[in-house]
Each structure stands twice: as C-alpha cells, then as structure tokens.
Length: 611
Image (cartoon, rainbow, N blue to C red):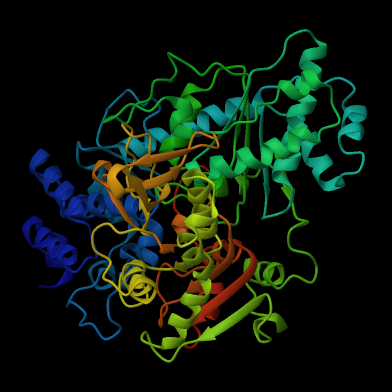
C-alpha cells in the first residue's frame, strides 16, 4: 500500500503501527494510545493517530514532545532506528517512516491535527479545553507533559524575576570563605548569592560541592546575624547520589572557617528527592505540593542533570514562594532516563545571569589521561591522546569479536578486589564491617554498556560476567550477586537505581541464609538487610548502562561499545562514561569508527524550556 493511502485510511495505518511495534520500533503502549484516540474520535485523521503514537513513543526516548519539523526532516530518527540488539543484516520492513512521510508537509500535518477535538492549540489556561493532545508551534505534546513544561517554565521565570536579598558585606564574606580557594568558585558563589534561582554547573572535580557549601555558609551567616537562621535542605535524584553528597558535605562543613553556630546550621544529610517530597505508594502524587509546601528557605538539588521534567515540576510545585533554589550538576552529562533534559535546556537559555560554570577540574590534572579524553570528547574531538595507546590511565582494548577471551581477562582483573572481599569474611570483626567492605570493593570496577540488548548489551554481559567469575548461570539468587532496583518500591524505601549485594550470613545451628545488603539511601551511613523474597523488580548489576551509572564513581571504569553505530551512541554518553572513572578508564571496542562516529553526534532532546 502506498504512503498516501496509509495516511488517509485509519485501519491500514494502525496495522502499520502494529507491525512497527512487533519489530520493537514502537511500544505496544504507543499503539494502544493511537487505537484509544481512534475510538474517542471516529473522525480523527490518520495523521493525528500517527502523531499521537509518535508523541507517546518520544516519552520513552526521553523527549517530552514530538517535534513535527524535526520529524519531517529526518523521519526514521523518530523511531531511533535500528533499535538496540537488532542485527546489522536484519531485514527491513517494506515501509519505513521516511517513506511514509516523504511527501508530507508540516502545514498539512498541522491541519489534520487541529481538526480533531482531541487537540487544542497552546491554550493560555491549562484548565481550559482539557484535550489529551496539545500543539504548541511545531511541538505536539501529550497534555500532561505540556502542563509539566509550562509549570516549570512559569515557576522558574518567577524565581528569576524576583530580586534576591543579597547578603550584606558580600565581598568580605567571600574573601573569608575563599581565602585559599578557587577564584572561579568564588565568582560562582557570588552569582548564586545574588539570585533566588541559580545553577552551578561543571564537570567532575570542578568544585560544585565546595562552592555550594561555602554559599550555604554565606547565606546562613547573614541570616544568623539578622536574627533568623535559615532552614536548608539538600536532595539528590537517587540514593547513590544522595549518599555521595552526604559524605562530601560532611567533610566540607567540618573545614569551613565559620562559627560553630553557622556550621550547625548547614545540614550534613542529603535526602532523595522522592523522600524529600514524601512519596506515596502507588501514586504519582507526593505529600508535599502547592497546598502543603516544603518547610524550608533554601533547597539544593545535586546531580540535577538526572532530574526529569515531571520530577522538576513536582519539586517546584512544593517549593515555598520565598525559597531559594540552587541546582548543581554537569550540563554535559546525559539527561534523565525519563522524559526531559531540564538542566541542559535551562543552561541553554538566553538569560545566563543566574548560571555559574566551573571549568577547572581539581580531580583531573593537566596530565590526566581521563581528563584529556573527557575534554576532547566534550568538544567533539575524537583525539584519544597518547595515554590511550601506552596502557596508562586510559587504555583501549580491541576485541576480535563478542567472544574474544581478552574481555574475560579484563573482567577477572577488574572484579578481583570484589571477589577477594567476598572471601574475606574471617578477617573482619563483625558482619557489618565485612558487608561494608564488600560494597566498597564492588565500586572498584564497573563495566558500562551503551545498550541493553544484543551481544554487546547489559543483559548478555551480565550473563558473561557471572559465568566468568562464578562458573554458573545468572539465575535466581546466589551469594555475591549484585542487584539494581529497576522500579521504585516505596514500601521498602528502595528507589530505581539503588544497588545491593546478596551475601550469606550465619544463622543459629550452623545454618546460613542470604540477605541483600543495601546502603541506606536517605543519607545515613547505615546498612539495610533484606530477604531476597521481599525484593520486587531487580536485575543483576555487574554490568550496567551508562545512563544508570549517573551519580556514581568507580575507581576503574570500562566502556563496552557495540560493533556498529547505534542511535544511543552520542558524545554525551561517552563523556558520562569516561567521567565515571577516578583513576583508570578502558575503552573496549570491536567496530571500526564507532567511537569517532559517537563523538560526532550530540544528544537531541525535544522540548520547549529553552524557548
């Protein structure tokens, strides 16, 4: 059937969407939504049903809308083809999006969309014409995400336009706090002190935490001198990020050149954003919202690049009207796994007066191979540097194929300290000390993958690692199995991305039992011991996607690239993977030009926050 016939006949178009879903190019959810809209409006044009399915699909790819102009410019990219794990020589269906849409112009598509009562065109009031679809310019939204975007834009605009009360004697306070510090950090602190809403962005080791701790000391000093201490809260999107910031904050606060009263007024614990807002099991809603706002004067969000549009909207809804908001993060990292690239879009805004960019890395010195490689990738340069070839801080492992035993050798080396820690129970005074050591050893090394499916993906590599390390299949529970939570479990206070390790503990009568040990994800230093039967959706976590690694650091990191370019391979993915490493980074590849092609590609996330 030719494209014109499909675009004018509902059932054939829906059949085509089903065929795409069968290949994994669309989600079943996307097709179901198109069929639901077809039932709601019997006169809905096929182009509206197509737009609805594609707009829904974009949410799963991290976009908050379907950009009609971009879709018509490169139609096949809207489905992110080929999907993960699809063989390079897989047969191609007879009709790709490019062929379907090649004769379509944006005016015709807009006309078909606006003819349906299911869609409204950027209404001025979110409570009017509550249609399931909204068209804003060339951007087609599912209504809920259009509302999130408008709410975030409106609240942040109000924060930017409100004059902040600048601490008195600012320059002298800054001089005291940064007497031996970094002038770049001092300037960033000054920028943030003058605004109700501010962003402090920079790569690993640039001093974001150092800067914000001194900023909090500055604000708290002024408040205490005025007779009213500030209520300050710290949060991060994941338990791992919250724990890392908690550890860093405590060290920084202890070293501040301030009075004990001011030091006591700076919190040392970091909550997850879900915990801060008061998550409610089985609901998208939180205990804190506009009717029950958070009780705070200053809120700091770390790892803000991981904040989805929905979570940012919920957070801003619960933010008190007079509060300050400070976002910390690396704008060059991958954005949230969920829809939205909030930090990246906000840093691209034309008004940069409230944004402080830290560029000098104290972690990666001028001679650092990791730092040089990260910087080169970040500016689109595929140069790998001498360190890539001499086996030093940064190295390349070239594989013949997916079964090359050289990868097994690297995995044994990388996870050696973890295996040793598992077997060192007798050297520790108690079980908790041993469990802490195992958890710490697990972070010595991590294999990161760009994709989930196929021979180069997370699923296959976890199978391979378990076979290599334990000579067993990755099935069921066993001592030493690391697991990642893949869905929030509010009843257990476990969040998506939390990692625990199954360990064997003695029981009365010479028996043993497995418990999965998790670090507490509320910023406290303790451990939690859960029976495996209590855990819901978890997966083995020896290998993990680069996306899931955000907010983490590993002593030695290895990135496994697939043998052919994939839509997920971008400059931001490479940069994020490289900067997870503290002392050693290995690039593992088998396909020619894949690394170079990824460096040349930027992540494109469609939304309207940047204008």
